[in-house]
Amino acid sequence: GVFKTPAVERCRFSSFDPYEGTRQGLRERYFTINGFLWSSLYECIVVYMWASSSVPDCDSETWGGPFHSACRMAMPRQRDALERPLSLVWFVAAFFVTTQFRGIHFFFCHRMMHPWWDQKNGLLQGDIGAFLYRHVHSLHHRSYNPGPWSALSMHPVEHMMYFSCFFLAFLVPYHPLHLLLNKYHTDISALPGHDGHAAPGAADVGHYLHHAHFECNYGFSFPNYLDKMFGTFDDG
Image (tube, rainbow, N blue to C red):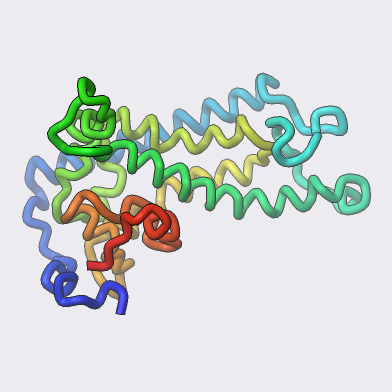
């Protein structure tokens, strides 16, 4: 079955962290805490834009449909089912849209930070991915035996890209609950992919293989349709 091959079993998760308590462990904690600060900063930017009316409230004049204009949604009322049914439908659908947007946003941001053609390339060869991997994303891949603290252990430039998914609030009508879902999903969803344990842990072998082989499994392990679509899925 998927993720049950001999190659995977040889690289099965290890509960022993060879750099626990070392400078590398401290590095992971330092950059992960920085990541939460970036997350809070981006959340504050969105809330400030709402509070200052730089992004207006959704009312009868600004509401033109889900993808017509960005605005801050109010909590739906019962009468909205008759007066503005599309608004009510979008309020519910936006939760699903947020999680799917997160997956697509993460896949392409992540893929962009890996070599596009050859790891030895640079900007002179037009390989922005190789440049970003060498100077930015390689910090995350120093966590060769991932654990929970590895999840957000990223270069500040990568944090900027990773948390920019919050700016979906500047593209579509968005409620603060949608923003909170986006934030918590972004903050927490990386933890299972790096917890380093099989059951009863997350058993995310797909991302574990990504840390081992670098050029596969760029997206979420579930659903993993983007890796399958672009030919980067590897089950070991």
